[in-house]
Amino acid sequence: MYETEILKNFSSMPVFSLSDVNQIIENRDYAKKFLKRMLLNKKVFKIKKNSYTLHDDSFLVSNFLVKPSYISSISALSYHRLITQIPNEVFCMTSKNSSKIKFDNLINFFHTNYFFGFKEERYEDFKILIAEPEKAIIDSFFIVPVSIFDEALENIDAEKMINYLKKMGKGSIIKRVGYLMEERGIMVYDKLKRFINYKYIPLDPLLKRNGRKNKKWKIIINTK
Image 1 (spheres, one colour):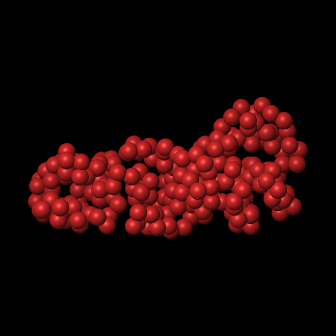
Image 2 (tube, one colour; image 1 turned 90 degrees about the horizontal axis):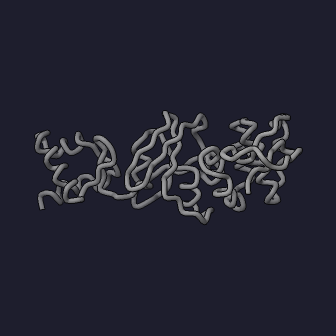
Image 3 (tube, rainbow, N blue to C red; image 1 turned 90 degrees about the vertical axis):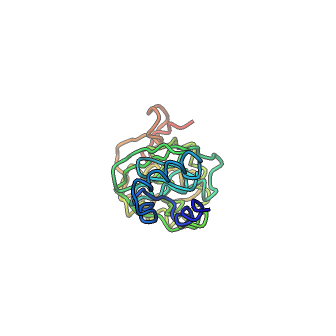
């Protein structure tokens, strides 16, 4: 009963530390022993050094391990039910350095200079930060193959996507996304053409450059 009462203090905390336990159990040695016992009994899970949780859920805890960060790429697209493939890893974006954390699933943190395009969502009684579909698509390039996430373009807000692309002003991403949007009948060339240079780039940056060229968007179609 004593243990249960102590653990209740952390039910509203997706991630907590030894110092948090020490606030409840004032003797630090006893706090360490308590954590060790809870870990052995699998009532508490260790995520990494000095990071613990009551929830065996990488998707939930990821947002609280590196701050600031938000869940993105195919993790966000799967959450929004815009892709059919269910990721077995969690993908997050952060303004800090890239890193990986192994929990029940691998949690990947990728550095971005474009820290926007996310909002607060309710998940398992907690508030998490998760990318909007348009930004999740943008964030996916260089992380996973285009073939995994391009289906999500069928259900996006075209104007929001255009605004995000203009805000970034990054020609390589604009050309790739613009081409994929027009492949789905969303005509955006006139709104984005000023960002298109004459250098050809592969549609999927993770694959070899072999493929036919699209002169309009200056894209090498290297996807299968």
